[in-house]
Length: 603
Image 1 (tube, one colour):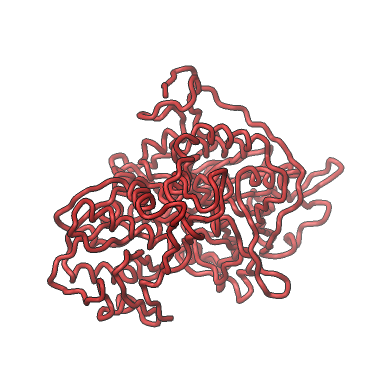
Image 2 (cartoon, rainbow, N blue to C red):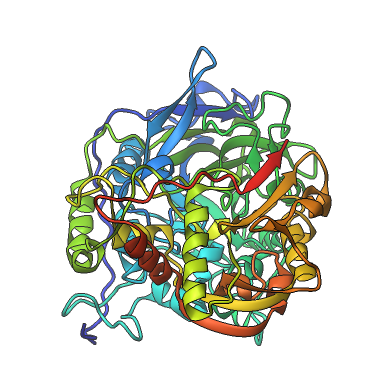
């Protein structure tokens, strides 16, 4: 692939509006009415050339796209919807061909419309994007007319320099340009990184805030990622950076915007919560403001200055439209649109021209499903076809066979167990003394589905599908631990930084134990139940453990995994999975989904 040096040109935005059926929605509102001073004549619509005090500004938002340009497979491509009778059903959702149509249809007739995102637009991406260092996704977001996004932790997967390239453009430093004569143009929209600072200068590595302006209306956006980004990204990805507290940072820049005369402010926060229901149209406020959601975003929202009018969040891949009281005790809208482009949020911000602020009592918001029963956006189809053509020689190669769906849901997932088994097998090739493998569930990005995605045939696993499952290019590392350390590792799943949100490692065959969720902290791992091949763990014995390089560095809140000895580095994790599938499956003897019964869970 050749690098080019022709002059860099920015594309001029084009707005194509495609009429389509309206998506399914759930609505949350702070109040049904404008402030008492408003009248129908002075409302958002105005009319007859007379002055309008109040103007509705449409805010469309989504988060955690992760380069899913094509409709995600299996459960990753569905959302759960509560029906009128209280039952639930699943709806197929996602794919940028459909997302583009839905967003364009939603913008029709809206004079004031902004599209924003809550981070993790790239990283942990399927082959069509990840193989090309996510240039296809940036190109798609430009076509979607994204106005602004915060960074997420996955924007740092390849480091700050690569993030800067995605923003500014230019061909990849080692891969070069992917199309002869075409230089990557970069993002048309600003990435905001208010709390991601250069260690040497102490300044944000990208813009901390951005102001949207149209005529006399101004809306400011502040973008942050979670403070714990170094705990969920490989050390190389955040080298030379430090991450500040989300609340402190947002409050700081809210004052800056206020001094600039910008009173309407939205925070884009790549941190989120866990709603009480997995259904996207669950009424988050039904039990009382904020009661329907838990997790880090609750305390963050409660402490962000009342000067901020709405919070667009992400990271947890959950769907919610909630109100959480600000420090003044007034409800404020907090939204998240799940992940992978399956939903988008439509929020109405009613702008008061007298004050320059948002009339928060009039804010309303709804999550809409990106259904696949609308016309595909032709420009997105062309984009996908172009990049798929480039990826096909690599992606279409068969690497294994399965007899059924191998899912990625649950505390212990079938695909997590399969990956752990593959890493154990790879470890034994490197060192026959390897005893077990542990895989972080966050590194498992998708299921393997039995139904053919293309022309490969049912049950065939392609390289592209394997890449979608494990896109990080971590290596498989071997380390020695004492039995005592191994027990401590398992307890760190549910204690320390993981106490509030457990991160259960996926175990290889032979490792069994009981997880008692009726207890708290480290006690949830029942020590006497931990066995390897039927034998209790000996605290003084040495065990050879395979993990990926992220875990071997102590990532995901497992400091003990960073203390192993006698390190040996193997191939990348996707190679290990490919070798395992190739060696253990065939068209006539496919691999069956693991039973996911290595951890006994007590609730």
